[in-house]
View (spheres, rainbow, N blue to C red):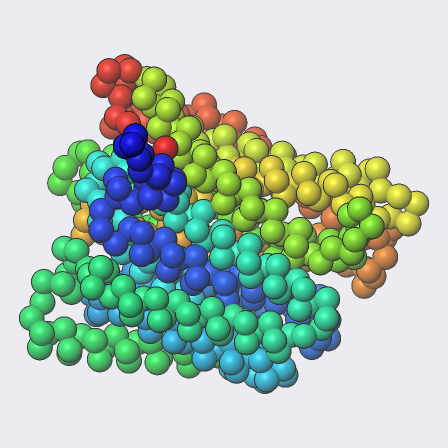
Length: 507
């Protein structure tokens, strides 16, 4: 009889073959961990305006603060994790806090909203840095597999977003907000169970905390818990005071950038100093991207609900389902893009991170700039055809593939080991600052007239989308022109096909 052939391995199995232990577990943990945040991220504006009847001018700053604190707290996660407790322990605590927050919010009143958002944000804000640091520390600084690992993880995260947006959109159409938040709590609980089951695969590697004695670890853990309790109390107050929250996020971000610039100047090795300067340049480029990244949770969500004909092939479409274009493109595009990088680099092409950033900014900017063109062709009642939104979201998602996951890998490549957590947290803080600016832009897009009539509000939406879209595209072009200088700082040189490093991801 002919010898049977083993079944061909799928992409995920090939990915596991070339990745260090723990990377596969982190992929599925990342997938589950995003469901609750995705639910609140894209439904909070609808819950506050439609169910709690908040005015737009109150709901929008609240959502902006929610997003800003979520991303701004990544910095604190980078400080506590690896110092006061292991990254995996802090991640598990974050899941518990998110679960509690969702359960409190499900009570369905304004008082419960603020009390529930406090533990939810504390958990969500702290644990994202943890999971990224758990992944990146499994690679050596020059290990090109890191980039592919983050692309896969980013695709997994967006798979969680896809499921959450479908479920939350369906529940919103039925006005079942309590069930929506209970669904988020269930996702947190499942993540916690999976994390505990994979606990032994996720130890800290060469962190300050991992080198301490058992007695020292216990003492620091209690201090870390005390910091988290203090954070819960502070968040309750700050969420009720958006102006103070915004000033705190902007001030904290500015302080951290200045601090990292000081770190750059004090590095003993010129190579390390140059890499930190390259990090700062690309941080500002990512800030421009994250402004647009945060818009769909605020102005674009309200624009879709009020100014777009939400019917496709005769079917009523929930706004969250349109948001699903983003994770769908990334789920498919992330692994494919990773494979394309492998092929191109194998043939001697240099696809550098600055090049990916510049292309991403141009694509994202053009995607948003399409919407004012669609507004120009709106129907007699002022409603935009849904196809314009679908194309815009697809382009913005394509641009995100170039920037989102690559940024995390960039930090691992450029950060000295002793600054990894701080620089990872500061990198994520760009999203928080971008959210604050996006909140301001959303208020500008909503205009000064208290109306939901698209014939009245289309003008202010078009002006804001033009300003952000074309402005981002210009920044992308300028970054493209600066690529040689950034590569010089990073220390990358033009490589031939023989010497070009290839990222093996099993495609």
